[in-house]
Length: 223
Image 1: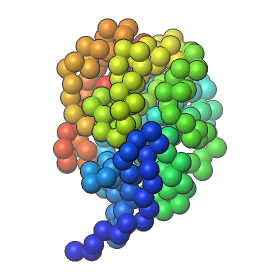
Image 2 (image 1 turned 180 degrees about the horizontal axis):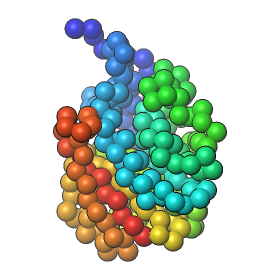
Image 3 (image 1 turned 90 degrees about the horizontal axis):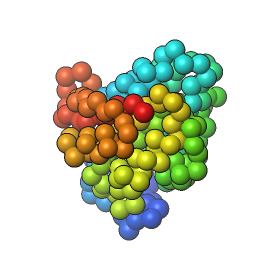
Image 4 (image 1 turned 90 degrees about the vertical axis):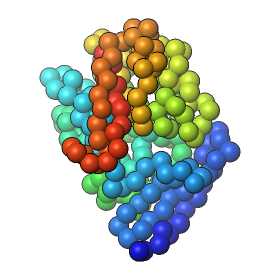
């Protein structure tokens, strides 16, 4: 078997952990210390996150979408496929190295989505945008960390708590939708979404597409 090759390692902003980019043949892996965060062969649930969220915007002109967490670009690419030519997709990514990887060795994986003129990349914590921008987005997609159960940064838990959810709701336009990816289910989080003024629906999707890989969870929560 071809061994994994370490391409780059960078500190995670606001964390003591390291983010690593590995390659094995045409397969790529992003890891936090020794734990794999994402793999280029396992992106079915990231595609589903964008597909489920953007389906709610089918008839909305000039839709504006915020994506928190760039990953390997698959969520951005899937969102662009669903949205019209007049849409804007704002991508908030805390780690500058992840943006650089998506413009470099990872760019072709999802079809160079950052080159699309509809995409604006902001190298900031998505929490900063949620706090600052009111009634700005038709959809907010969060693929940050491991979902409500944080893995990389303690500060990410704010996003999934009452204050973070209130900020997300305030950043949405009327009838906007908050979509959240998670590695697993959380009944408590569904209840938290409802308490924050959302109408949440929980979807279980496969990591590798229709019928392969482990189950992941996506919440589609309408304002």
